[in-house]
Image (cartoon, rainbow, N blue to C red; front, top):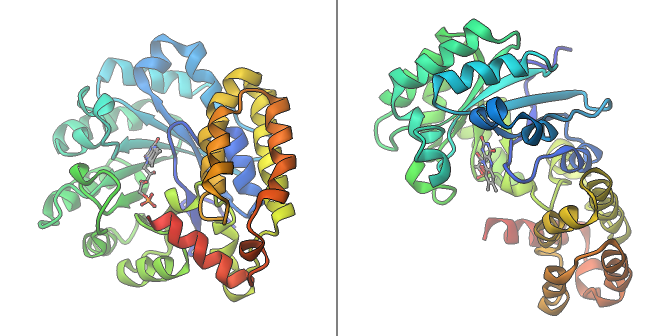
Length: 338
Ligand SMILES: Cc1cc2nc3c(=O)[nH]c(=O)nc-3n(C[C@H](O)[C@H](O)[C@H](O)COP(=O)(O)O)c2cc1C
């Protein structure tokens, strides 16, 4: 079975800036994730500060599928970055046309570029000219009321060779909140039968997963915040009723391995700085008192992290971890949707 452009039922892990490094992806892969991406890589940084960006391009020998995502709007920067990426092997090269954060938008890139369709397509044509990789794009809907500009963008990308397009069904101004425009995602899918359209937005559990598939008709779905701190979501959605959430021992072991791998990769101090936000995600919605969760913010060394994890089993709420799996699953899901 070919992994690209994604078979029916494929669950993709979203590119997440500041998160989806190799240790993060490995944790997700232990929970059944196959399709994953690097964090978005900025074209200018790759072109002019290559050393710093290169750690983002690290690929594990055990990774079955890895896409790289590039963001940028300056054609000269993009050309150099595309040449650099040609020195690497990825399963797909994805163009970010959906990032709404001011740091990216003020350079005219990401979702801002997606709103200027001619410019976006001019940039993407460089991908076709220069890249050895197969191509995809990740877009936001351009207008929540009128499907026409989103359709024009998606069609243009497809004509330039995008074999898959992920559509996040929210406009730039909505950032990550509010309803997902399933109807527009559906129209993109219907307009481009030869392109794999991946639906994205708001999937935190089975109910939302079934809903996005039903309403958009998309066979492939991308998970983002729903799987942050809950990589078991991949297994849950694949297994359906057979799914059993992790025990406290399994949950602790995955976290320990994840953070341990970060320390091995980045060194203790830099790793612990990133680890704190990741640990907050793992603890959310799992029945811990705010007191134990607040201690996460003060973990600065591996020794402190190890001691903290040792104390966790005694500090957990019996009532949460001894509940039936289905109840624990729902509790975690509710907190992810908050
Ligand atoms: C912390 C964070 C970082 C993100 N980084 C990226 C990124 O690097 N590239 C990208 O295309 N989208 C990025 N996104 C957007 C997600 O991939 C996804 O499109 C969005 O969160 C909507 O999906 P969700 O509602 O399931 O979370 C990011 C989102 C968050 C919350």
